[in-house]
Length: 314
Image 1 (cartoon, helix red, strand yellow):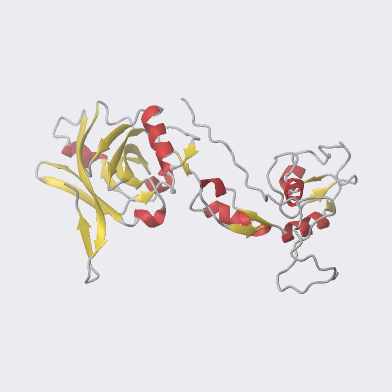
Image 2: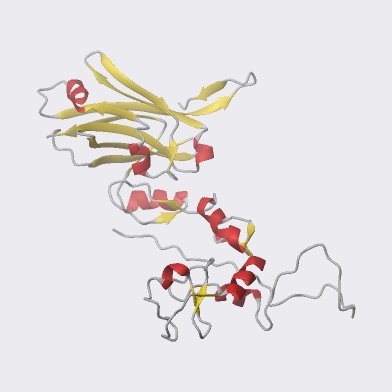
């Protein structure tokens, strides 16, 4: 399977030092803003590089360890190098690099997703927490049929699903799908189908699959929104399956693809069909599964009276 490679862009300060705001010869200057620590002869970019672990290349956070020669590494990698400095091969003790930890406290750095549009700047020790939930962070591929490692923005993932996973693409907010399986007794957590719908200027993923729920095999259909959680709440969807004068209906809010496919499935947030019911809807001799799932997606609109009114597409 082809993968999409995204260039990693690191945003660093363009300043090589501290610019003098005043040419006055006075040695002291009152200011309410705290001064950042700057090592002699080392610019902000170099300080940032000093905080990169030489083993995993990730930013180091306390406790930052060092050997007797002053070479540093992160606490995670300290256990991986068997107590040997990766730079000079000398034995590592339990020495903390308190000076470098203090320097880190003085730094303010842009979010690593600044190239994707995040304008925020954070103190060094707050940056990691923000990046874990940053709204500009890339999305994971929503394809559930394999452990796909591709990440990117929504247009990138739509193209990836179409070109690499060969996912069916449809326009419109209503759908009518028929699922057929020759041997419905063979259920091995198999994902059957993923279809992408484009409506209201957004993309939605319709999942349909079979998996074991306890000791019983079940079939499940649900919709995910290709965007963040807040925007997903602006939409609703319904799913319906039935035959022989009976039907099951599910109505809910699509989950964002920020939530993994497995998380949505394991929370049972969708239309769940027990196998005996599915075979009843198949209208056959119970040797072949034939399910027709219909549904629609709509956008919620608040009226002047404060009521939620659906905006249906034609």
